[in-house]
Length: 636
Image (cartoon, rainbow, N blue to C red; front, side):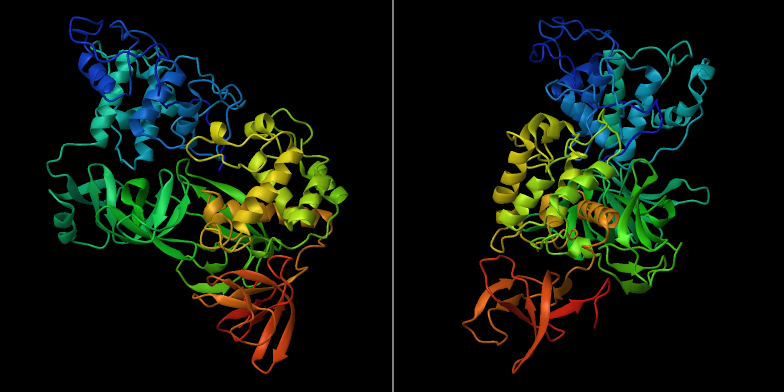
C-alpha cells in the first residue's frame, strides 16, 4: 500500500553511508577514530557492515550525516525488506545509491518525506529528528518503551511534537544529552553520534541472554509491566498466571493467549509450523492476520480462509489490552467500505469495495478475514456476501467498448504526480484487443493497470512502460521490473505471456482460480503481497461500472465449487469416466453459469468453459460439489 505522510518532521531512517571506496577494518593507530569517544561503536558497526569507512583509515567521525545516509544505516541495522507497492519520492531517482535504503525505511514508516512528495536525501539530519527515527524503528520491532523525564537545560528548544519520541528513546538509554546538560536538538548529527545511537538500538533489540524471556501484563495505566523472568520460552509459558498475561523476549512480545497480529515485514505463510516446505501465500508489512495460536518461534494464523504458520520474528503480536485499531467494514448509502488499519501510522485508509450486502446494518462496524464472511465485534456471524467483481471469472467479456473504457480513464482520473491527464487515455482499444485475443476481461485488465501503475503515472510505468508490476519483485521492484517497448506492447505481452498462461492455467503453480479473490483463492494468492490487492482492483471495476451505466454488474450468474478435493468439469451433463475435460482443483473456485440442466444423474450447471478451446462444459450441482451464488450471498 501506498501511504502518504502527515507530519513534516517525521521523515528519516534507512542506511548506507559514504559511497566512496570501502576499506576493510583498519587496526588501531592507523585510522582517525583511534581514541575517539565513539570508537567502540564505530568499530562495531563497521564490523557488522552497517557503517563503513572511506578507505585509507578514514571514518570521518565528526562529519555530518545526511538523511539518505542515516536511512541507510538504520535499514542495514534492521535488515529491512523491500515493499514493491511503495510510491517512490520524486527526488529519489532509481539509479541513486540511496534509492533502496530510503524506500525500504519509508515503506515501514521509519522515515518519510515531505508533503510535496520529496525526500531531500542530501539534507543533514538533526539530533532531534534522529531520535524520532530511532523511536519509529523501535515500533517496527514491537519494542515497547515508556516515557522518561526530559531534563535537558535546552528542553524548550525541542519541537513540542517530538518530545514524546525523545522521552521514549531516553527511557531505553539510547539517547543521552551532552556533558553540559544540553541536548542541542537542532544541531546536525555526526557520524560518531549516529554510530553510538544505532549501536545502542542494536543492544535494545538483542538484549543479553540472561533471563531472555519474561511474563508481562498491562497495568491500569496502560503500561507494560514485567511479572517474572525466565531463561527459556517453555519456562515462561508454564508460568503464565492469567489469560491476559503474555510473554516477551527482551522488549518484543512473542506469545499471547488471545489478541491480534500484524506483519512487520514481508511475511511468508507456511502450511507447517516448521516454517519450511509448502507455502500458502505471502503478505506485505502491516498486513493483519486472524491470530489463532502462538508457539516458540511460530505463530498460527488465518489468512482469508486459509490456516497457516508464520515466523514470530516477522509479525507483531498485540494483546487485546494494547490494541489501538483493526480493520473493519461498514455499509453506507448502499455501498460497502473497507477501513484498512495501518498499524505503523495508527490510522485508517478508506476503500470502497462495492455494493453492501443487504444483511449489514448501515453505520455498524463489521469484521471479516476473507472479505465475504462478516462478523460483529463480539464474533457473531451475521452473513456471507461475495463481491461480484472480486469473484467474477476474468475469462469473461465486459460489456464496455474501447471508447467507454477511455471515458472512464478520462473522467475517473484526478491530477497527480504532475499529470493533468492519465497516460492511459487512448489504450481502451488495446485492452479490448487483449480481451478478444487472449480471453481476458478488458474492464478487469484496465483496472489492474490503473491500480499497479497509479493510472500510468508511476515511475515504473513511465520509465519501463510496465503497467502491471510484471517482475517488480518485493526485493528490488525498480530494477527487476520488465521493460516494454510501449504501453501497447506491455498490455499484449502481459496478457499473452503472464496472465493467461500463469493465472488462468489450471496446471500452473500460480493458479488458484481465474478471479481476483483474496489471500486464499484467486489471483491475489500469488500475484501481490498486498492482502487487499484484489479488493482494490475490484473496487475500481465497481467504480468504472457505476460511472459507465452499470452494464457489467451481475451480467453473469456465478457458481462456486464446494468440494475441497476438486470438482470435475465434463463435456456432457452425465458422470462417466471418459468425459472429463478439466478439473477445478479445490473448493472456493468461482465459475460462470449459462443455465441449469436436469439429467438422469441429477442437477447440473452448464457453464462457460475456462478457455474457448473447450466446447460444452458442465458441473454437477448437488450442494456438495458446487452451488449457485446469487447477488452477494451464497444460496443454500
